[in-house]
Amino acid sequence: MEIKKPKIASIPYDDFPDNDTLEQMARDMRSNGVNVVTGVLDDLINWGRSNSLWPLTFATSCCGIEFMALGAARYDMARFGFEVTRASPRQADLLLVSGTITNKMAPVLRRLYDQMADPKYVVAVGGCTISGGPFKKSYHVVNGINSIVPVDVYVPGCPPRPEAFFFGLMQLQRKIKVEKFFGGANKKEKKPEND
Image (cartoon, rainbow, N blue to C red; front, top):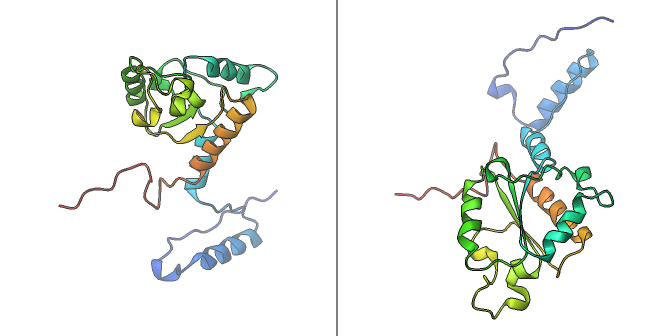
């Protein structure tokens, strides 16, 4: 088998007006026996990022039992890339908050969120986490964790079924796949203030 080495020169900006030019260059190189793959680096990075989420579990009640079912053989969350659950916030990039959050737990939850490395995501699971659930009018329960940490995906239910967990996590994957880290503004970053 003959290996052909293509001659690749720097492309002047005047010779590269649009994507059709790039496609034509790729066709020319393929016709000469050179394998060329074109794509967007954002897509590759976001594909890897969305399919290797490491959740930090913060399960306080019955929603935690449903989350445990995801790791069992029947549902097998490893198929989707969520199986590496972490006990340390410095190793996790997804905060799965499951269950009732009391006012005493709120500072701890915020501290865990702050210790996670960026980019980080939060999934609120169950009625108690989202809105306080049946304890909504209690003096000791936080009525929604969105007042403590920014939430990316809400999974409703009391407790939600494992299928609902999967749907919420797949929604988060879809959200991650459209983020822009190169060639555009990252939606998670705050815009600089004009002085």
